Image (cartoon, rainbow, N blue to C red; front, side, top):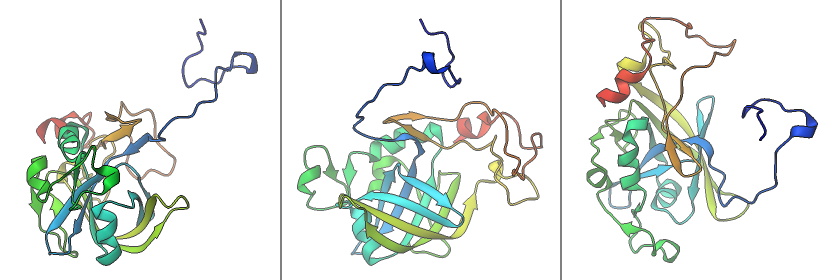
Length: 229
């Protein structure tokens, strides 16, 4: 048996890699909930696991047949709400729902139409300040944004959205007092890891660029927030 710990750097003779063809590449990405506006002025809520930030721009990857992609092509306002690990059941309740009616043929076998996704997920809508779609009240981090670019990816199966954040809301319990910094110990995102839900483990270290101290008034182990929500 190879005793080299996972993550260590084995010698060339001990390398254990093999070529694989995974069906998906969700290798540990955060889950976000997107709120967009439908044609009739109602709102759609959808979970996605392809989101990353570059400065004030959040890049989103969406299925091109979904209601979210359709909405953002016509109405650019969007709210990006980030759930905690404890909220994975609400995310999973949303997973088989679509705001498209009729349901696209590619989704017909595993999705059903649901016009009121907030109620279906057991979540509450909270009025936004600068965009029309509401925030998800239970999520500790909420980003009001506007889609500045919506385009298809090279395969044609997905839509890539570049959304510029206009306002950030954060639960006071995850903010370092007296600052605008999120405490990385108090906050833990919900991670989608090869179609399984995870939270973060203990802190291993910090970057030289961090602006939050290794020890501080908010650094209580991070469990209180998740248990309270």
